Length: 375
Image (cartoon, rainbow, N blue to C red; front, side, top):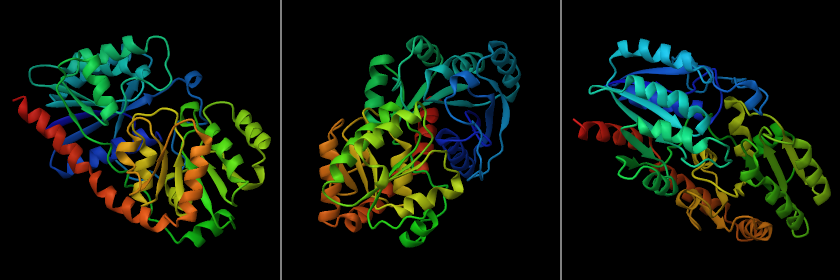
């Protein structure tokens, strides 16, 4: 097939750029002719809470892309939609994770969709974690001009069935993010990070309210009374960093917390996961999480809350431990159990086994099956 793949790609950074690169790699490996249509502007600066939208380190998986789309300029969408008709694509694929980007994607779908050219949207979520005015209207615009969907979790599937009754879709779990350097010995990683603690737990990724770092801080306050453990927080704060730091000070955990307040470049991610015994995801809400898939790449055990697709991915007692959301005591108890029962080795082995489920082959096969059945 001739495919136009819309989405962020290097030099833009983050999980979505990684997703696009890995999907492109798998589709081209299977013989498809794929062209990535990248953003000239993904977010206007006023709406982007991070420090930069561009990757500060290596590409991870370098893929070719053509930067055309300005997310806030409707004339740009119409102009490039008209020009891209010349590509005579068989399939247009967009990724959806934020309603703000739906007007541009929906307009491009509308202009390119034809008897020959079908459209497909991969749903990382459908209902956003942090709701804003216009979300449902923007989302509806994109779904109106989408022929097929991929839902990446049971919760997204349920939302899709309610939002687009009769939608043609396949449910495929978010594949594993396999673009990082391999795990290194734990002590080597700790030396690189200047960590001497015996026990280390990791919170990784962008820091937003729904990810529950504030709950983990309260859990650390409880943990400090029961055992020595270091919390390693790695990620850029999308919000008030000082509020979190004040919370840590109030909880009395400054001396056992290391904060790397920045986006972690691709070539350094392996160091942080290698240094930690377990990844903690104290999310308040979720659909699915790229962090869990990154953890599986490193065969890292996970302690996660029972929200969204997390319990679909993190198998309680096999690859990690599942606890109720918004419950610092439950998280603290799970961490104590993890160490007291020496669960790192068996859960890491379970994570290594579970990772086999999350292949890019399954994603590509679902895309092929949807389009094949339409002919």
